[in-house]
Image (cartoon, rainbow, N blue to C red; front, side):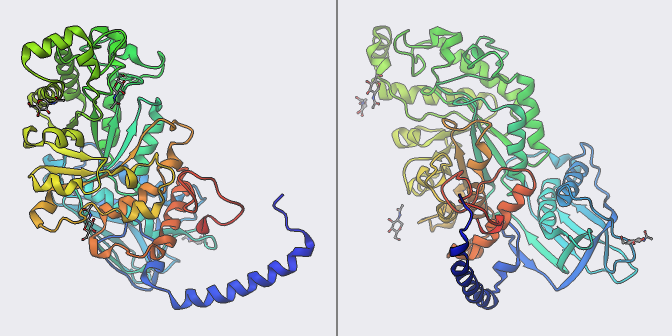
Length: 537
Ligand SMILES: *[C@@H]1O[C@H](CO)[C@@H](O)[C@H](O)[C@H]1NC(C)=O
Ligand SMILES: *[C@@H]1O[C@H](CO)[C@@H](O)[C@H](O)[C@H]1NC(C)=O
Ligand SMILES: *[C@@H]1O[C@H](CO)[C@@H](O)[C@H](O)[C@H]1NC(C)=O
Ligand SMILES: *[C@@H]1O[C@H](CO)[C@@H](O)[C@H](O)[C@H]1NC(C)=O
């Protein structure tokens, strides 16, 4: 299988030669900027030249920044090892013209503003000069915050390549000036550790891979109907709802994930989805269920339900320092409330029907989150059912309706866009082109309303995802969305053929960095169709 018979070989050769002629010409003609620049996501402004410079053997970071927590230095060291890609590198020295001694990093914010938080300045300016022979020099990176500098490192790493002839690291097309900042301040990826447990190293690998595409929020959908893997010290039986004793995260594990992400410029948005999607809570505390036979949504009539939510969010506030917490609120089927006599009696006493009880539940959970200092993200059903009642600081998370963002921002609330037919990674038949072309500001023309769309998020729901396939299901399609969320609107490609080569290059880069990104060519996480170069698959 797969080997050409000798009789067919000649004809195939002829066709191949003809193709080379045709495409060779086309490539010459279409040597556009897109094909030369191999940076993903595309920066806001790029200028470049035609010279080659080399990284010195002592390539190091120079800075006056008081790097107390080591974020800058560690980020720099990670960048250098990414650049080397595990090749045995020969260290360039003065015998090479145009030697770069290192990267000089200037960070202008006072150090106490280093706290990673929503809306932090992520801009940077990167300059790679062409040093004269015998006069090595530094490249320059300027940023307002250390997190902007980390993005600058990622961009610099994509300018570098290993030269297989001289075995040194080189930067082609110098001098470079890159001025860059994200279009949206929220650029998220959802992982789901309820439908399948994801081991800690897997989550850390996902976080690392997110930095390569400049995503900045890991939305951690921790618990759901199927399992409750996280330790909640206030209610220690909640994680009885884990699949097994080992498929769990301690509170300290969660804190470690948050810290790991934070050092890489990524915030963690923790989610508890209430009152639906919470059956697993009742394994440890059955009184949270309406009844043994009707187990969700959480019992709205029971004060204990809200005590538990308060305990969880109190514990969260010690671990998840992001300004926002996600309270879910989607797909609530209230039939257990009306069919359970105890609860239906309670509803009558309170003068509420089931939809009013759903609203009561969501708003009460919002108040609890606010009391712990959080602003709230809720899935869009809460907006559709009682949008006017939501706390004005609520961020509505779109997933169902196309065009929902338009209604949300017209009502004055903020919105995160994740419309499922374009940005759900578990929809394997959604192509990278569709991910790329999904525009969060579609049909929103008013500038003030545009600002209320804080960004978007691609969602990696976990029903058919575990450690064995998560990376190739996320990548490269998440990267297509990442460019939509990072790059200025007028620099985004309209014709997908313009970016195919550059995205293929980024996918190969991910592979070189040990990320199991799937080929572009095919459905989500498809294997390669046959033999061939990474760059054309
Ligand atoms: C500089 O590098 C070249 C090429 O690797 C090597 O042949 C030469 O010995 C090095 N010179 C010094 C001074 O290290
Ligand atoms: C709600 O749940 C009940 C009981 O489980 C089920 O019979 C009903 O079909 C569900 N309704 C919807 C709209 O899914
Ligand atoms: C609940 O009551 C409100 C207010 O009277 C009403 O608008 C709504 O349609 C009712 N919902 C149901 C499911 O009966
Ligand atoms: C956006 O506007 C276009 C026309 O300008 C319209 O065809 C389309 O249906 C609108 N989309 C949404 C989601 O409202």
